[in-house]
Length: 106
Image 1 (tube, rainbow, N blue to C red):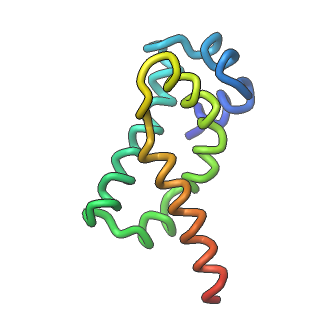
Image 2: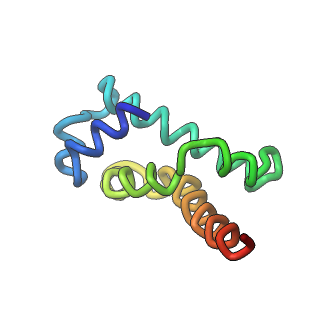
């Protein structure tokens, strides 16, 4: 997560991300590893293999990760694969809804 924060501070858009994190470089791999972890969690939650409440209460906010990574992912989708990290996008939207429901139930 520290690498993601550092890259997010240095790379507000896809062009700066590409310059700082060329494909398969170490910083790219570090960012990819974080996003793949959230992608896997999203798939597990969607299919009932991971409890959504537990995940959202215990893991760093996917909304923050997605806010930082979305511009990069959008560029990667255009350049490489249209469906890249779509489950992370879904998970961030899910967490937004989950947080809204938590606030409403308190």
